[in-house]
Image (cartoon, rainbow over all chains, first blue to last red):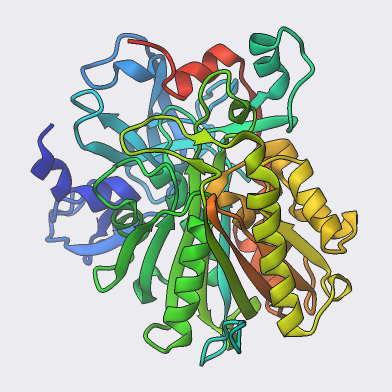
Length: 132
Length: 353
């Protein structure tokens, strides 16, 4: 695993830290320092609430490298309350069926661990059905 | 005997925020007894909480810590310590606490470290946090007790070794939802349960874990604290004891003169199992979820090896408006998906490669 690459973006991965555009107020995730709405410079930190809803989803049976141990799992496009759409795994579904429009909330979970049990553990955001 | 056995900070300290976490999955004891004993007679608890495939002490601590911050209504930047007590830290070398701190937005001007003392690692961190705030070195400090405990397949511990725990923010008493009135710890070298370096599962001294270990340390710690505080069991609305099963805390309560109803709200082991470093602390979150201003609570942890930390806690008028700012302990317990032994074996990494 490329440790420095993951280390650099740990804040956005752990807790959905993005940016807000000082010109047009658009909320930006992932952070990219340029507003995708108005093209202005946008470097102001913004902590997303973590609330959103399922925009679309797919169940993964044939997983890419590093994710094989947790199949089958559900990947969703989650539309955040503040606007941006993020791609993330859904978790803690139990026997609950996934539906488009289902309200979800962000949790920080293990994303994957490489090199069997010798490598670094990668943590990051996933979404689950709203607890309460 | 030394004078001033009870530890009281120079500056009054209290619990500013608290948060619980219990994973979604439950393994009923009857599935374990069916496999290893050929009957559905069950075990020392009804069922235990099991962490999902993507959960560990770090992820569970992060959620409990976020709940504690929500109730405390403070920003993580004001924390001067994030301490995680556990016997199942995901790394042997690399602190869980730095990951938790970064995820909740604390640091980098903090103390961070992982505590280890079997089932009392979390309350050991709590005592340290009381000291840090009480000395004036910090205004706010976080102490977490969390575990994803493991028992060897077929061992008695497999019935109870569970996942869960709680996080606490300690701060100035005047901003707190419950005040720490005093604490006392009782520790001896008693090898009732251990896990050697590099070993996956713990060993234990069978019945040696009872009288000379659990009961001696719990009762000595509780009696000394109550003696020094000038209290009896009747002065406490609630009591929480470390809960490795259902019977031990009930018996400890009887020995100390407590009634069943004083123990009931904080006795979670029948439905979530033994969450080790989280057990006494999550018992306390369940009590704080229902307690009223003025209620007094006795909490006594136990960690093998062995020792107990006892706390005398008084609920303030700030609690009622704080408790609904995050999910209650009962909300997590109600979120329940039953799993069978095969799913449990997969979730807990017990399948051979």
